[in-house]
Image (tube, rainbow, N blue to C red; front, top):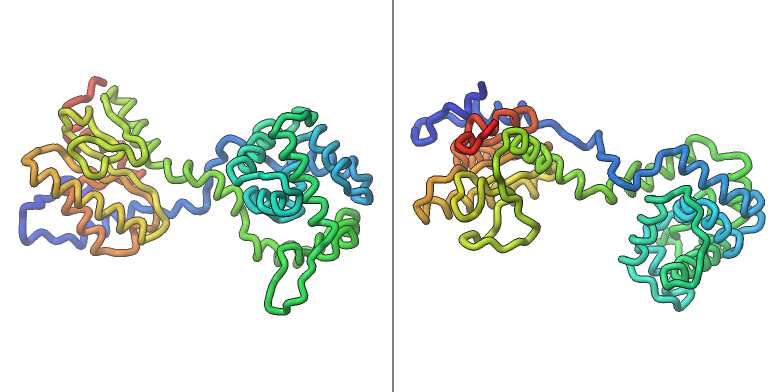
Length: 339
């Protein structure tokens, strides 16, 4: 059993060093694994979009708005392939489109279009006359024009976004790469510039952050414990900042939970401050509910003093993903267990 759950935090001589070591030993970095999330595209699906685009443009010898649109209508994932050739994010493509065509495409619309293409990557989608389809046509038009122009800059200190192996000189660069491929060092260099999995990491950032929340909910649900999960920025009477979970509810709480996964020590420090604020509020109002922290990620493993403060504020009720199964038994939440 973890030492921190049995320690007497009223003891002025309590040594926090072994307790901090204990939590640090449980914390693991999570950056090597990402949730797939809805809309994740595997390579085989992406490759089918590439082949659709290649067929429609006759091996990239006839790259026009009409041929790209034909590929997108046949396999919507071709839209994502085309964006990948350009090297743009959806908001960047939206900006170029508005600037180039005069058709207004805001960032939200571009993200929604991109997501819809990924959600139904291989379902044929002929373009009609609705506003969304007009925007898609305008994005394709702007993309084709940008691609044909290639990397044009006369300022040595600036790096053009299309200064890539497959787009630097427009079609002259794209066609041989499509025919012959690129040397592995070129692939590695562009991966170095672009960061592996960056686009997917951005798209599932909220899911990454919800790993701990999901683990908390699993434990509470399994024990049939009633709980209130608050929404982002929700105002709860009696709290200047609402905790992530209240058991059973805000009217008669026996436990408050702050949950967080972070790889950044600054974010971890902010969460520690929030937990401390909950403890201060509890003591000022004379309540006796538990203040609990459920954490994960290497961000909490950077500053020992922050972990000491977290242990003090929670009386040792700091749970990691490896000790989440102990959450019920070592807090007042056990009073509401029905299973």
